[in-house]
Image 1 (cartoon, helix red, strand yellow):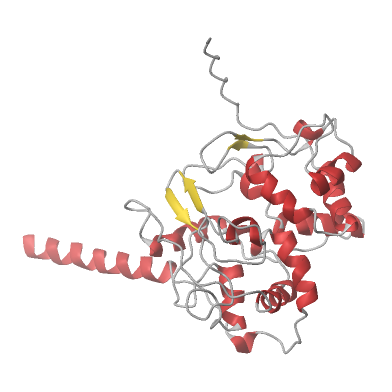
Image 2: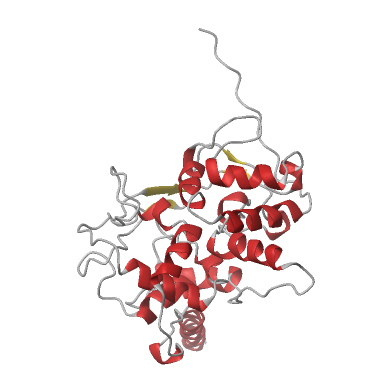
Length: 310
């Protein structure tokens, strides 16, 4: 009887491990799956700015947005992530990557070695980007200066340091669907929706997250605790932006200045350094889309602690 029980438990365990291994297998895109095409680095510059690559990947301690040596530390409830080098350096960066390696990383969140990237890399939004845009971005990155040096490894406690488990996260929170224009909307609105929801990955910071780190879809864009641990990210639905005009929003994306003459700070200041490089038409499109978002209540903001006298 005991022997049969042990055998049954062993079979269940083996089946469970096999199912976990199959369900969590990292997805990849082969070069043969990419249609023949001549990528355009000049178009990749627009993608670079819209996607905010330099906000995280620019080498720390220097002002050049095109030196992408990484190193930024991103704190989170799951540990600290360190942003990697994505310069064309052949040893420390992506200089030896193929185009398919890059497309796989950005859209599927899978490394050239076949391991899951952690979703601190916002492929949850980038998965909706157009394939041609990602290919143009890769062509542009190859024109930038190579930077030597690798960022430190991530500092994650168990069980978050088990990369294979990220495959379960992907099953729960990724749909793998490219952006589809809404035929009932204008071309400007659709351009804005594309930039905000895919390349711009605005929801990654401006949405509350559940206990597993997935975006709470019912409160998308409704703000919440700063994912980096300090402060509060504002609601950018009409609940938070009802008093802003489209012109106000477009001007903010260009200058970082709010309608009441306040200035963007923190990580948003880094975002503005990118959106300020977009065309006026793209900033206007993003503003038009954001102003169309219905009002959504975000999570309650905790009261600010009383100021200490003296």
